[in-house]
Amino acid sequence: MFGLIVFLISYSIGSTIKLSVEDAENLKKEFKDKIKDIDQFGIFLNNVKIALSMFIPGFGIGMGIFSGIGTGLVFSAFSTTEKILENVNPLSILVTPFGILEIIAYGIAISRSSMLIYENLIKKISWKNSLKPVIIEIIIVVVILFAAAIIEWIMIDQLGGLNIK
Image (cartoon, rainbow, N blue to C red):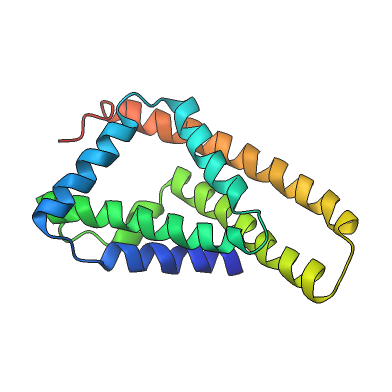
């Protein structure tokens, strides 16, 4: 729950940052350039790279915050320039089948990052004792993100692709 809350708060903060129309257009362009040729495997690899970095003790919490704020900023950019998103609650975008799965996966990774700090640096528990749960959680996160990427791609495909204005 800790990681999930950290990500949601970070996303919410990012989505409330007001951007000028020019900055919003630039961020949208960068985002569209990044995803223009992406497919379900690209979505999966992008999300797995982010999630795996969130497992790193300490750094993972920062990466989760950075990722949440960045994702929220992208929403803010689109809501600044797209009238249809003007009155949409930013959190509603995350309440999709793939969004929920991604948040769960990121929450697991961020939480493990904080648990590793506590267990290994504060309580001085051996890293060997943490290895098995970390490997199991990494496998769970990878499987969750694989399912999320497939669902996301199916939804994108059914909506006519990524032809975002």
